[in-house]
Amino acid sequence: MRFLYKIKNVFFILLTSIFLSSCSVISEDLSCKFSEIDCYRFKYTSIDHFRDSVEDHSLKWSLSDPSNALSGQILSKDLSINSLEGSEFLIESNPENMFVLGQYLIDNQKPREWLFVSEQAFIRSFNNLGR
Image (cartoon, rainbow, N blue to C red):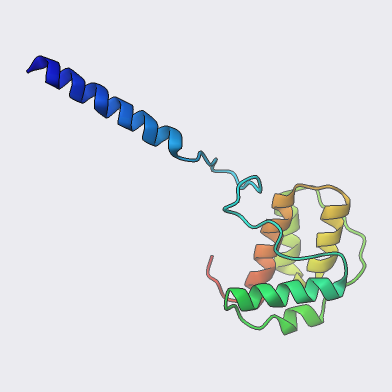
C-alpha cells in the first residue's frame, strides 16, 4: 500500500512538472517578444500607409470610425521622447501626433513597446474601449 502511495506522489510530481514546463512564461512587463501582443499594427512608411493600416485595424476589430482622428495627423514635428510614459502622454493629450511619433520612435530605435502603448492611447482617442 505504501508503495502505491509513493508511486502516486511521484506520478503527481511528474505531471505537475510537465504541466509547468509546457506553460509559456510571460513577464508582467509589456514585451513585444511574445506573439500575444501585436506590436506591428500600424505602418509608418507614409501617411497613406498609416491611414490604411489604422482603418484596416479598426475594421478588423469593429472599432469606431477613425476618420476624425486620421484627418488631423501632423506630418512633421520635432520630438524628444525619453520614456514609455512620455510617448503615451503625448498621444493622450495630442492624438494628432501619432503618425509623427511612430516615425520618430522607429527612426530613433526606441523600444517597440513605446509605440504599442502610444497606439493604444491613439485608439482610445477615437474609440471608447474602456481599457
